[in-house]
Length: 203
Ligand code: ADA
Ligand code: CA
Ligand code: CA
Ligand code: CA
Image 1 (tube, protein in one colour):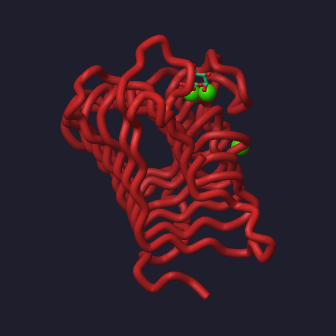
Image 2 (tube, rainbow, N blue to C red):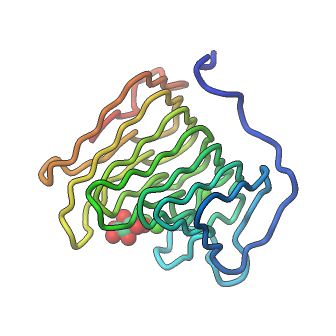
Image 3 (cartoon, rainbow, N blue to C red):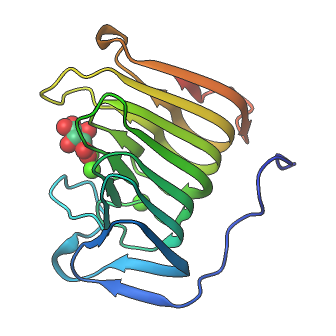
């Protein structure tokens, strides 16, 4: 069964665009459900940490109605507060999106959309602040969220997940550093295809 609180499933793409250098977004970019994928020297979507993001969002930016295709390179960066609305990753690259920035009050909101085939992390939280993930589906992944475990700072990081459908295989919904004061809150989480209860909610 599917969670009735989630919007409908995977969209079909409205055309495709090869991206050869990072697209900077300030204000709002509505992709109209176009598929964007990395090309050239951006990165192959494997686990190398030296890949470029396909989109980089300025503080206050919104990216919506976008499909990130394969290769996904290093996904999407947010340099401060930002919103990703109805963004879909067909084959997560090194990771899907990263919150950078330096303000403890910044909030990255992921509302709607989904991600598939993440060898390791989906959402990576390196700066301080809060990541809100809601109305989201994830399928075949390592961790849906990871608060950076080895960044040179020791920021407090917070995550709030609600209305999530996570389909096994998947290792964990969240990995946090309680020694740095990180917190994770969960509501209305549905885990599918995991009869042996192997998926961990928070580690
Ligand atoms: C790994 C790495 C971190 C950071 C992160 C990322 O987790 O250990 O230092 O680089 O990837 O931002 O992708
Ligand atoms: Ca990484
Ligand atoms: Ca992948
Ligand atoms: Ca990364």
